[in-house]
Length: 619
Picture 1: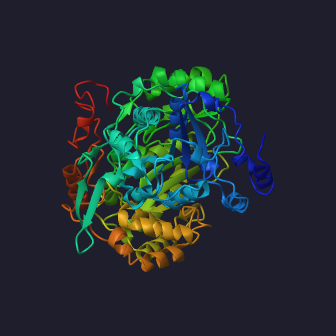
Picture 2 (picture 1 turned 60 degrees about the horizontal axis):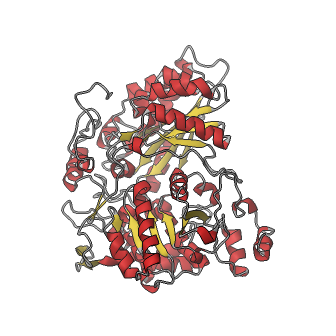
Picture 3 (picture 1 turned 120 degrees about the vertical axis):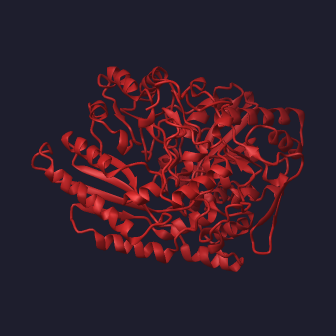
């Protein structure tokens, strides 16, 4: 039975299906029989959050315990937020409709720096105090996981605990500690001490940060016997971790509304700009037989007619062809199409095209990232024009007429010639289409260039470099537009203002927390959405607090400098990042780590080599 206030609110908002729950696959339990309640909060809209595979994995794992209940909450869109404030309705979970204050643990996933104000908005709507220091035992434990934890110092003061690494084994251990603390009446401090002993659990209040006069960090000092360095949690063998076979199927179309199976974790490529490629090392894959079985069960249980084989680089799976052969046995009969969203230019083949287009043909997307070979070598992309040409010719012969290319601008050592190279790459692909005798008859080609502004990220070899200024990026964007001379080429580029704020948060420290809170109180939330982003309000707020944004975004970080994230270890050594940075300056490449080990340090997480280099399994 709906609360009358909720009924009134739903009648006045644009997409009430975002807030009703009741979707197929939702888990319901009797509250009286549950010992630990967990609210999984995604700090963006329902449609974005319901596309996130991590939530689906953890939802199934936690709810397999009879006495635990994991429920979901999302950031309400502006119309619903206004209604909830007007009607004094606290933020609730979709399953029980209980407010977040009824839960033992409220967990946020940190996928994107520009969702930080949404976290504050969700705490505010729930009536939960923002700062960890202002919450005693009567409040839920506020925790976070996800990639941005690798430097979540700008929002660390709002959280009781953060989790580095992989939640499948770590989160159940956290929940066990919470359940025990609840039954035995521990204080919050006692619980936090116990959590700090779990691999990958970081309690920000147990670390004191001091600063030098010039603003750089002087020292990071642990207290309460907390470890000096927190090491990420890792699943050593991905085959040991079951795949989810039941998804909650969204009522309102999700951004990626399809079944997804994670085929591998990590990446062997070592692209120097890619934070995920370093955070999730080393690469570990699942066996094709396990993946095939899980994919078929998932499609059968959910009714989805598209399944995505997801990872950072799916075509690097050593058994991919075998997996596709297995899936083709049932996918065609059940009208299920297979998509590979992260194909690489250098291992695209006619065989892959044939096996993934039997039911439905989707667009073709590749990411050369840079427009010249020199710059591709600087970023260690390990892709040549010959490989791009071969791939496009295969695609055109197979009937493709549209190609989408992802690039970045503002990369280290970039010149205007590199920007011109982006346009020239697209032009050469247009010419390839018309020169191909096997191209689709009577059709024209469309090449779309999508250009993001490069954001230097922690735990990468480019963490040391300054981001291009807003003026520099805007000049490069205009130069790209001037360099395109064909109507067959579309150019899309990102707003440099949001990328600038992303860089400030990515490399920021705890002095930013009051700024983020003040900006939220001035109406900043949904910062990742162009129509909601208030750049002027952010700049004014930084100024009020005496914060120099260039110190974080546009300053070179010394190779031996103590960073806000120096005490957070994801397995890759600082020495390796410095080596890779120096190689980048010389435009020297590093081979993929399934071909040769470059000594990044991540093998210590597995207790031995990441790959069997004597076997003939790597390619």
